[in-house]
Image 1 (cartoon, helix red, strand yellow):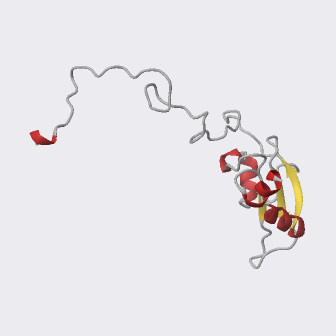
Image 2: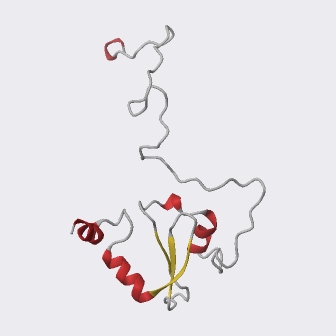
Length: 134
């Protein structure tokens, strides 16, 4: 029962039932990427002549989890999806890494309230501001 209620309202973790119903009615499945995200394209073109494209994330919805080639396809930079015509990668390009900011895996500097470890003591060259001294 809880899973059904979560599907109704929890858009940040997968897709809601309403979104899945709309995708089923108006979109066709294109492909899935190596992270499990599923990509869809509208069956009929919109008023501007373009077919809308959509992604349903596997797990937490985070746009930084969309690889570069799929991002280009979603934004109509490429006509063919990467499953049909893979993006040619340069030797200097790095693999895609998701953005961990705001998650428990985010990097925190030493001594931050969210991080671990102790911050180094202030040295003698620092003097705290005092409002009475102007």
